[in-house]
Length: 128
Image (tube, rainbow, N blue to C red; front, side, top):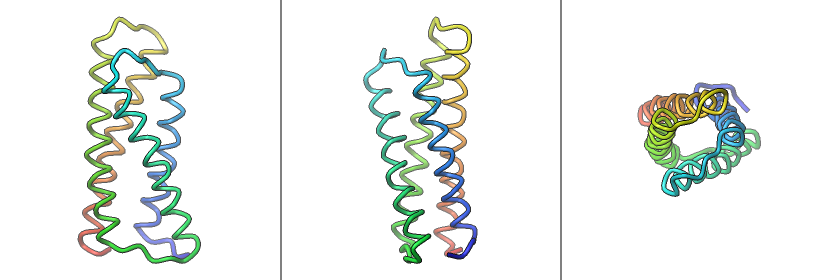
């Protein structure tokens, strides 16, 4: 297992997804089914995808750059959409205190995760 840029990005993305799931547990609000489906689908789906990719890297399997590019582009789009929906919900809602702050942090971190996936997609496209 070599520690290159792609490996480091995948590990960081996996850690952030785990953090987002923890934040989601402490700030879940079911007022919007669309937001709930997008958020839980994105966080849970990418937890599974990133665990599989990281295990593949640990076991020495090569990951096709086209597949990596696909997962990164879709991840970028989904995490930015999820973050925007979360921020819209918690900024415009009547929540106060830690619950609201946790929700806003979750939305911001989700958008940051989307940007990380965009950078990862650029590296995958360039073949680095």
